[in-house]
Image (tube, rainbow, N blue to C red; front, side):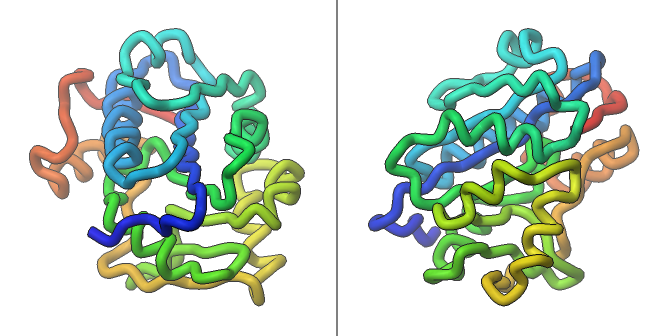
Length: 207
């Protein structure tokens, strides 16, 4: 696997600020994604939590991560990004945004994204059927991240600054977001033993 650029301090930001009170599968997925983040070799990992954060911290292995609790998670995932900016290491030059309910992203994808970004202020994965996470942001756009709103704020930023976005080709379809029990069962079928079912039966979750 290609390592992350040695000259840049890269922070992995994992959004896990779900609002569901029934957290079986949400905790399983978040734990898996954090494991991927650790294997990606980030210099810093931030986990942004929200709903039922105390339960998540009691259940999920958060070793090696800086935890941020976003109490405004109901206003959209942009609020979790803004909350996490306060926990950034001062040396951070690049943020790689990952979703805590998207277990199909691999450490190899993260490495390809960072390598393919070059010097672009923003970089997004271009899968065979469209753009998707993870997404990389250079320090020059951190102030704009703090001003985003809603669940689509990141995508609006990419559209607004389209000439500054590097699209990095990644094999395969956009990794599935897990928002329903059906999504969860489909992910398990696709991943085989890659995602543990130790957290229990599929339940409705929300990012």
